[in-house]
Length: 431
Image (tube, rainbow, N blue to C red; front, side):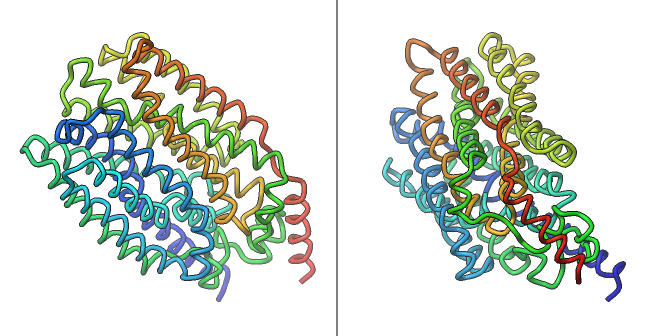
């Protein structure tokens, strides 16, 4: 096969993988992130429960996703990507079906345990790993495109739930979301491939000769990188982990409480749903911007720039957020930062620690995020209902965003990864 045909075959396959990962992310990320914030209000009213008790449902979901993600890489090795996605289809949709028939608070928690297991198997690790494995030169934008799926995910979710709630049967929306989730995940299991090497291709459609001309590309082609034990001994690993964890309170805390904030200030659930969709649109812009910046200057500068702006936006919302115009302007910058972490941290893990053991290492990197998500959502909900009110909640969120962005500024490529890449390039050049 000549070089032109090989490259053409790659780009047909490579961007197909991004497209299918994008569709999968609509379900496991878009539905997962935006359904809870919309379900929270009718669930609280139906159960007559304290809002913080209901908010623990998302905490449980986040924790299950985080701890389950630790073994996703090992599961892929044992039952392959297809097996992981089929299992994800069963569990993730099953969580929605439980919500569709739930009548007590414990059933909310059970639903999010099951849904969390499914999300881990078809979520963050796989959806970040596929574009990371298939691309080097365009890795940032490929990951950014994949994670723009939260926009259509939000549109679908908020409209289905808002209409079902307006019709007096919000649980019907949970059943619909469950059916869609099962179909998408099951079909994607038979299309997605974990690495281009699995079907005889190399990242970016390059040949071994092309890879030998640049150390980083050679490292990706030869799949070099630190293993889990080696990564745990690097400062960059821990800086990335801490930065990823802290953003859980800074971004997910406000995000999941925005509908409650708007309803508290006199707006209805329809307005809240529109605003959540707008945040998803802003997030799409932010992810694409993050991808472009990552490909040009690296993930730490992309992440820090976007998230310092996010901290300012949260302060503006604290001061003038009851005004819808101000809320939407500041919300754009908050939304632009939302999930830019998915682009920046996955890219940083691949670039700074190497692609060979991405799934195993990224499972550890990602763990802190859902733990702090789990803390952040009920924490800000509780603070907003206390003496500090919503002002205190948004200030605390802004502090965590700044701390996260600062940690990321100090992360850099490990010297051993650079040495491995150079050795791979030399080996290819000698062939």
